[in-house]
Length: 335
Image (cartoon, rainbow, N blue to C red; front, side, top):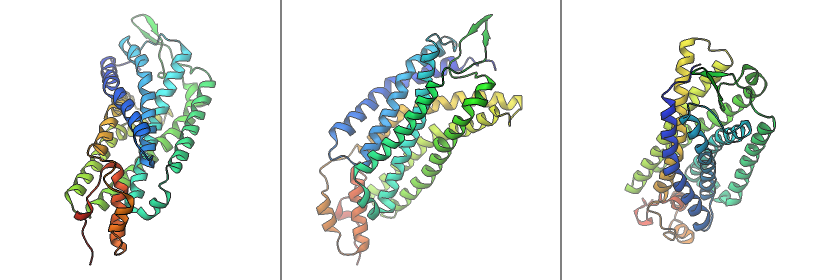
C-alpha cells in the first residue's frame, strides 16, 4: 500500500514534542520517585518502571524522526532497525502493563484496604516489575536473535526505499509476527484495557462516597487519568485488532484496508503522545503532597472507634502516598 504523505509530518511533529516534553519529564520523575521518595512504596516502584519504559521508547525516536522525514526510508541498517523497532513497540506494551499495575495498586488500596496494608511492602511490586521486565526482555531477545524481518519492496519516484518495521512480507506474518501479534493484542492490549476500565471507576466510586472537597478532587484526578489513558491507548488497541484481522486476511475489503492504514498511523502517534502526558499525571498525583503530612500511627489511632472509621483511616493513610489525602478532622464520624 502506498505510504500516505501526512505521516511524514505527523510522526516527526509528535516525536519531537515527545522528546522535548516527555524525556526531561520522565527523567525527572525517575529521579524523584527513585531517589527522593522514602520510604519506597508499591506506587513509587511502578511509577519508576513506567518512566523507564517511556524513556526507552523516547530513545528510539531520533531514528524514527529521521526515517519519516526522509520519506520512510531507513538508512541505518537492518540490525539497527530490528533493535530500535523492537524496543519501540515492546516498551509501548511495557508502559501499558505498568499503568495497569498502578491501576490495580490503587484499586486494592481503596476497595480492599485491609488486604492492601498486609501486602503493601514494595518487595511485591519489585517482584512484579522484575517478572514483567523478565518476560519482556526475553521476548525482545528472542525476536532480535531470529534476525531481520523480510519486507516487501517499496518503490517511490523510480527508486526503492528501505522500510523499517512495516510493509512486512506475507511469510513473516505466517512464521513470526502472527504469534507475537496475537499475544501482544491479548496480554498487552485487551486485558490491560479491561482492567483499567473496570478498576478506575470502582476506585472513583469508593472515594466519592466520602463527599469531601479533597475526595472530589481525587475523583477528578482519577477520571482524568482514565480519560488520558483511554484517549492514548484504546483507539490503538481497536485499530491494531483490525490491522491484525486484515493481515490474517479476515478483512479483505480494499476500502477497509485503506481506513485501517490511515487510522493506524494516527493512533500510533497518540500512543507516543502518552509519553509526554505521563509526567503530567505524575505531577497531578503528587502536586500538593507533603511527605510528612500523616504518620501511620496517628492516622490509625485517630480511627479506632469502629470498623467503618478504621477503614476510612486506612483509606486515607494509603492515598497519602499520592496526596489524595483528607485531613482526619474532615472525615465523617460514625456514631
